[in-house]
Image (cartoon, rainbow, N blue to C red; front, side, top):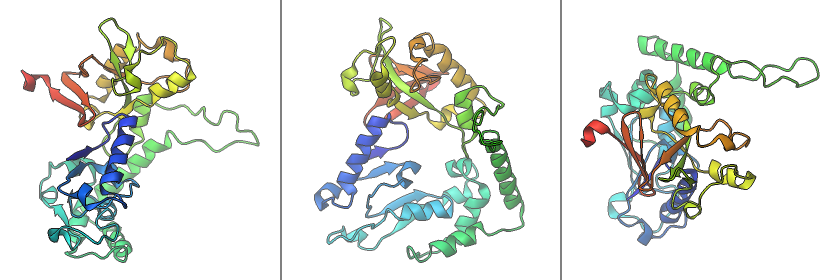
Length: 315
């Protein structure tokens, strides 16, 4: 099984993507594909040239669903399993009936409902894309649609706070100096994303003697200088991952950002002069690649990425 999601540091994500392309890409072999199960999140929707024999997916808006289906039987193959001669996508429909499902926490109820109501038993790609997407996004007059429109207006309003103003006169001086409501870069990044807020951290190791190191699989776990040069800063900036959405909810995102800032800033004062690293948050792990954040135990590995467990559950 190969697991792929956003909670891997960037170099490990690149390795995972290469594994995916090698195992199930255009030039993959029946041997590399045999008995392989790939489990992934929305990041699989990105422009990876991969080709699945069969696809099982949660419910999501029609345009994204069709994009996922585009990874199914993407290339002509002389050999496919007997059970996958015809491209079949299984859509988990309890996302439609369960009001507390993960999809409904990410996507609009109206879009999920319209997609489920519109989804036919058979789809021909790419011929059916335009008609299906237009049908889903066509206006309807009901409570869910009105809520969706209001959410879109609020999202646009939040994004407007961070838009670059129109230049005045012939000079672009001051073009990027538009004030925003928050002075926190991480909160600003989270504020302009649709769906559940999220923000990135740099994942590093802090030894018992309070020396900062790369993770063992990154540059051999080398120790980082107190005032790293530009090349070292670039390597540190690569150690970025997106925190799981559990830590980015409206009721805890501010607290988690403050806790991370309090835990890391005393160690990275020498990083603040670098354009690569200024104002970046660092999540430190110990020699066993374990850490803590706001009542959760964390662990990182190449196989599973960043995992978290509530301390009460561990006890």
